Length: 317
Image 1 (tube, helix red, strand yellow):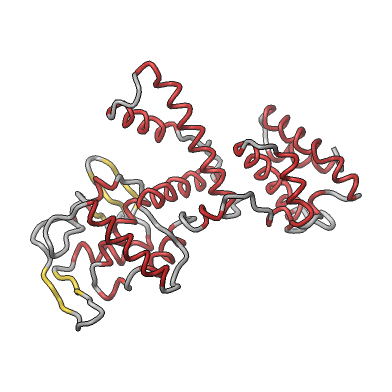
Image 2: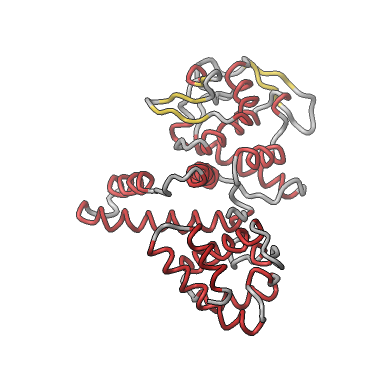
């Protein structure tokens, strides 16, 4: 390894796993010839110098490529934090191909989601139907299935403890979501806004459903269409470059909570999500019980790869 003592010190602080340490050493060894030709550690090189080298040494498998780039970003970030002479942001600016879709279809956390919702929808205080759309996305971010989100009742929103209690499950109510939920849970009317007419205040459909509007039952398909149209208009008008969907918001929320747990020292574990995917596939007759373990492992690997891509896309070291 080039600059061996420095890299060994990083590895000791980076991991206690012999397997991970071995892979780190292998990665650094594969870069040694390039560092020797530069006469400098990779932590001192800019993105233009590093990008073609990374493409060469990481191979064609996306999972290993993401793992290597993640390791090298950690290393360079560590070098910067430890004031290694010449260390710069170069490696942190190297972007693997194919991550643009992640950056325009997913969010990093509640603040990013709220910013995106503000770009697409009317302000909460206007009291329009857009508050219902906001709540729908927030429930997705909290981890609720969309078929359950449309069944949530106003009384199930616990503002004091910042959670939603539904069907025996507790979902987080994020601080940024509270204004929209207060409007949706408490207001008996909705402002109907049409570009060619004055605003009209309409009574909401009677009932206890949080997402009830003024046209009868709330349906997932109707919400999808309305949200897609709202998003398309916002993109066309240049207010956002984001392309949202319930599933992508739901995945963003899962990865956000996973990342927070990982930062707190907890292991990354997608077994619960994989179990749900297996159960869903069995219910739909996609495969037999004898394949449970194989299919579950496949789902766990896919979640892990998507999680790594999400972290890399948003520069989360």
